[in-house]
Amino acid sequence: MPSTPVRLIAALGSGALTMALVAAPVSPAAGAPRTTEKEPVAVGSGGAVATVDAEATRVGLEVLRKGGNAVDAAVAAAATLGVTEPYSAGIGGGGFFVYYDAATGEVHTIDGRETAPQAMQEDAFVENGTPIQFNDAVTSGLSVGVPGTPQTWDVALDRWGTISLGEALHGATQVALRGFVVDQTFVDQTAANAGRFAAFTSTSELYLPGGQPPALGTVFRNRDMAATYDLLAEQGVQALYTGPLAQDIVDTVQEPPIAPGVTRLVRPGLMELGDLASYEALLREPTAVTYRGLDVFGMGPPSSGGSTVGEALNILENVPLTGIGETQALHHYFEASALAFADRNRYVGDSDYVTVPLDELLSDGFAAERACEISPLSALTKPVAPGSPDGDYAATCGSPTSAAQADEEGLSTTHLTTADRFGNVVAYTLTIESTGGSGIVVPDRGFLLNNELTDFNFTDTQGGNDPNLPAPGKRPRSSMSPTIVLDERGEPLLAVGSPGGSTIITTVLQILMNRLDLGMDLPEAVAAPRATQRNTPSVQAEPGFPRAELAALGHMFANNPEIGAATGIEFLDSGLLQAVAEPLRRGGGSAGVVIPG
Ligand code: GLU
Image 1 (cartoon, rainbow, N blue to C red):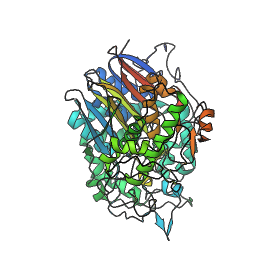
Image 2: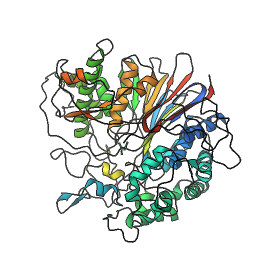
Image 3: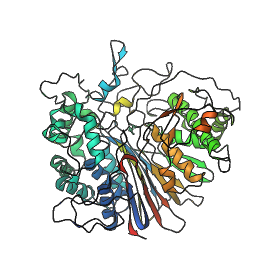
Image 4: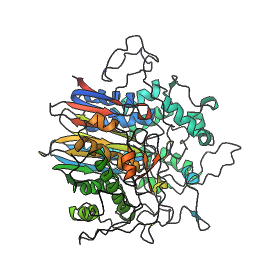
């Protein structure tokens, strides 16, 4: 079910809640939880933050206001989301950090993806010759990958930040201690997970106080999380990768704290201390394509985000979308994303383990070969077969169809976007995979462990060529697509990203098309009804998405109540920043600027 939009006002504050922007939080009584209005769009200068959550945006803006840069603000906001959006993100998970450095004009990325333990073999999710049930794998120690988020923060601050980890964690720690006001999304997400949360003593203690989800409008505190952040602030993030906290993680993974009387089969995990000790967040080259004169940078393998968004954009560039009408533009959007997904599924995995023909997938020649498949008159039969990114491009056209593939990626995750007064920009997507991750809180440490290893394919889906099977130390393929677009002068134009499993790719693609081709501004591009074609027989579409004329071209539709929860920032022609979040999806997001106006 889509969550009900809730605007957090007046839950605890005085009658003075008249500010229009999150940049102006309510003054609380000392130590009392603060509530802030959530606004989905803010325009101004001095820096900007857009997240799904008012507390995270406020904390990020505070860092900017005190002189911090976009990287500092991104880490501070992400740490706050670990408190207020704990089912989507936190130090028990991983993510991808894309950074535009105004001083050099370069884009850098950090791969903070979780890794498989060294003991994990290709058949880890197969028992007696049969893949285990996806849902059973979700709630297990087996699916827990080595967390990458703490090291991502460390690498980002170390290389490009101006504040210490302790300073970056300060705001989040305060929110954990004084609490935040429970909104409808938090209630709904807890209730949806209550069955499996109740299976673990540590998780039910934290998230099911008195056996129930926390009530709407009450204040939720997480003192264990605050203590864990204090530990990281004092000792550095290595405290999570070695020492007592690492031991607690390993113990929890290997022997999940199952509540007495629970009969559910919870498979133990394979993680050992050595896996944590050897984890490294990696600096990687961004993916880069040129789209109608703009440079679009994204996240390369092990994410499929940058390559799939980039390939689809290259395919779309073969058609002048502006002026061909909405139906034709959306038709080409579906066809381009289906073709790019076929190639993603066949070719993209962790490039430290499999050969990913990235240059070819992102080449204009390959895109022209793929675009040749598209007819303006009728939809391709899905699923379409992958192409041949072999450097030898002839417009052969006439792709055979291929066998259908299930897509069982989770639908959790969060994306945040920050910019500062220097022109630096961060697009950062982080996750614990499913909403609620593995469902397992590390006892007395205040955070959930991910189930990211369910992003591996459990068995070969590609006739002996599957790039995304488990292997020791391997990173599962992701769809996260933090994206930064530079204009013709090489200056930042916009940054965007979203949660939503593999729909992330189409959500980012659709927002870019809406904004760059279809005449929408960024708030309109984000708010517009979404649809996602990921090389499946039917397109999933939100209510309000225009279907009739596309159906006449042969597209089939299935309903999806809500796709994604994007945030972004645009550098407007006026020189001002426009921070953008969802007006409604997931209860609406929170955009703010340092100096409104
Ligand atoms: N685990 C997914 C990925 O890496 C993200 C999950 C989600 O967005 O819900 O692509």
